[in-house]
Length: 416
Picture 1 (spheres, rainbow, N blue to C red):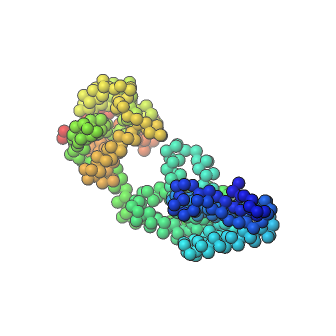
Picture 2: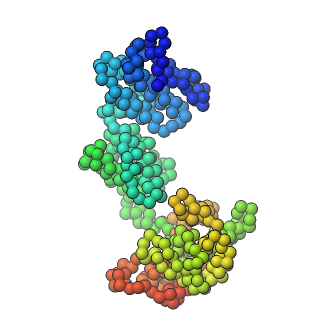
Picture 3: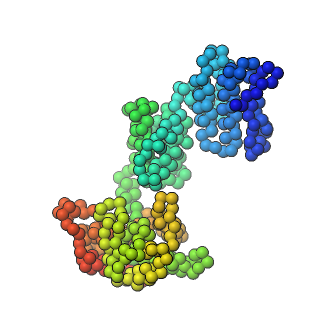
């Protein structure tokens, strides 16, 4: 309740948690409310409690503590229905604003006041409701929430989110090391949040603060496109495999499992999660079947490259949990590739490869080699699980046979 009666006068009180007492220099906050009336005391106490809780949150380093305090002031002012009490509470608010202006500047104090009095809407006002209505895969939802979370942490109010302010925010994130692709993803999530806000008339219908703020030149766009999942050269694949097989890992001479994964990717062009989710029962002497994919084209039979046969046979024999790559753990999204994918990331970074080189780049390597060997695009698409662009083969063909795919994939070679 945070009020107590002393000598016919009510006081607002709040016990300070032990972990922040030294930082705040007080054990208990206390303030006379100047009234013997309990109802008036409850109304007058609310802004003091809000302020004290904000100070505790700030002492703990909590983000958004000032905005939360302003929202509590807003709720406290809404609950007051008589002019005298309101005048008293607003007097306390003015004292708080003066202290804030000295500490954070006039702009911050003005925005605080406008949120507290309802003239502005906190940037996080609809955030929880927006999160609740996202009906997408958990991993995608988490990325969206994280992106928009950056927005509501950066801006106190919706009114403060203007095109100019967003540009400054992007500049800040660029200095922190975020690349153009990351910024564009964040902006796309923010646009989604903004569209949601428009359905509640929380922002002007014509406002588009996230459009046209990240403009790349044609040269930069071309460069960005070329640097995504850049193919490894055949010699580079060998170096990656050799380093994985020999580099000390967890007290052992080499990460043999990672070396096996690199070999599987280099000779199949399959996605990392496809390989990590592959069950031993789906593997024969001649091929393995991808039974689960995001697209219909991704469900396919992939021939086992002659150079891969011995590795696959050994992995099937050694499997202890029914998976070709045995012993991998699931992350919270149900992916088996997460941990080993990070191991690959650390390996290629230590070897000096750029961000444009990923495990997915192995897929690019396989496709590049098949193209240079004269393999038709439709046949390559059947091997790696891409949609066919032309209607005749894309819509009516049942796909290339295993022998055709085996002959095509056999043209992929490395100097092992």
